[in-house]
Length: 280
Image 1 (cartoon, rainbow, N blue to C red):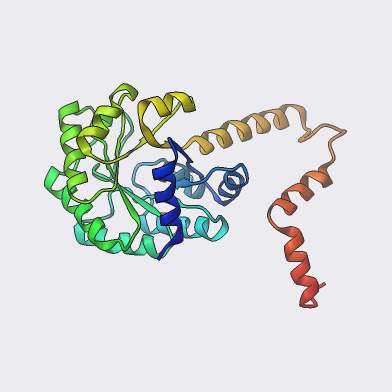
Image 2 (cartoon, rainbow, N blue to C red):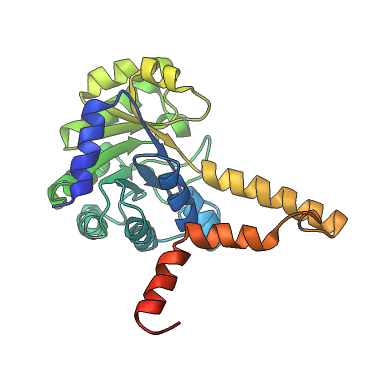
C-alpha cells in the first residue's frame, strides 16, 4: 500500500486546487518540497531536456521516465505523478509499465493518447479511440492503488472539442480517476468535469490560484516550467560570464554559497554519519 496515494486522495478531497509543479531533476524536486508544495509531477519535457539534452518528441524511453520517478520518490516524501507518455507499445506493454511505475512508488500515472513521435502544436496523430481506451483499461487493471490520469491530446493537435470530450468520457469509463484535456480553455473545464464525471488535472500557465479554483481545476500541473526557469537563468549567467569574465561579484561569499547548497542536500547529516562510522 502506497501511503502517498492516500495522501493524494486526501488532497483531492480536501483542497480546492492542488498545485503540482513539474520538476526536471532531483534538486528541483527537493527545492519544490522545501517550498511547501504537496505533490509533484515528473514530466517528459523537462526530463528529456535536462536528463538527455533532447526535445520532447518521444526520444526517451518510458523505462527512463519510470527510473527518474523512482529517484524523485527516493528524495522527497510527497505524492508524485508520472507522465508515462502513451504507456509504451500496446495495452499489454502499458499494463506492465504501470506495474513498474507503481513499484517505483508513484502515486498517480498519466497516460495520453498521442502516437509517439509527437510535435507540439498542430500536427501529430492519435491512437484510435479503441486502442487508447484499451490502454487506460489496462492501466486501471494493472494498478493496485495508484491513481490513473487519462489524457487526451485531441485539442492540442487540432481535433475538435467533441472528439476531445468523447475521448475524455471513454477514458473515465475505462477507469481513469482524473482527466487531462490538453489545450482545454479554462472556461470549459467545469463542463468537461461534469461530462467526464472525474476531477480535472489540467496543464496551466498563467492563472492565479483564484482563477484555478473558479475554473474547477482540481490539479494544476505546470509542465516544463522549472526547465524554462533553468534554461533562462543559466543562459543569462553564461552570457554575463562570457562578457564580464566574472561568475560572481567581488563581494560574494562563494564558500557560503557552496555551504548553503551542501547543507540543503544533507551535508550535516552525512558528516554525522561519517563521524559515527569512523570515516571522519
